[in-house]
Image (tube, rainbow over all chains, first blue to last red):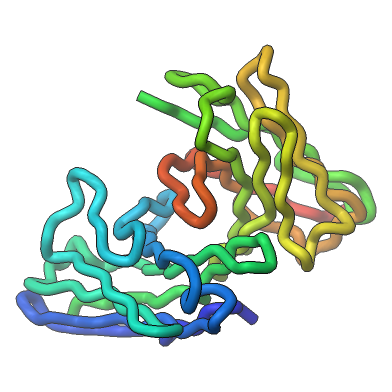
Length: 109
Length: 118
C-alpha cells in the first residue's frame, strides 16, 4: 500500500485534457515538493515534473503540475498516443524517506 | 552525459543476500548536492524507494526495509552498492539506481531484474 494515493487508471481521447491526482499528508506533500515521473512500457521512469510545477528541459509544455495543501495534480493537455504510460507522483517525507504514489496507467483511447 | 548501470546476479535464493552495484559514468559520484539511490519495482506493480547515500557515506533508508538494507559507496570506483538480506519471493523486482536530490530522481539506470527463487 503506497503512502501517496493515485487513481489506478485514467483515460482520454487524442487532443483531450486529462488530470491525474495525488493525495498525501502533511508530512509529505503538505510540507515538501511534489515530483512526477513518466514510465513508458518496458523502460525506466523519467522525471516529468519537479518542484511541484517545473518541467525539465525537453518535456513539452503540454505537461503541467500543481499542488494545493496535501494534494497535487498532473495535467496533460492535447493528449497524444505517445503519452500512454504509467505516471507516478513522489514526495520527500519528513520521516526522512521518499514516498511514491501507486501509479496511474494512462490509456489514450 | 551522466549514465548509471546496474549489475549483479539475476537470481538469488530465498534467505540469501541480494547484492547489486551501480556504476556511474560521465560524472563523479563525489559531486556535491547529489545523493545516489536505489528504487525497485515488482513485476506489474509500482515503484518503491529503497534508500539513498551521499558520497560521504550518509544514508537514508525506507523504514519498511531498513532492517535488511545496506547501501555503501566506493568513490574510487565511482560506484555505489545495495545489499538486501534475508530475501523472499516478495523481493523479486526490477532494481533501479538513480541520482537524486530527496525525491527528485534526475537520472536513472536501465534497471536489472532480480528473481528470488530456489
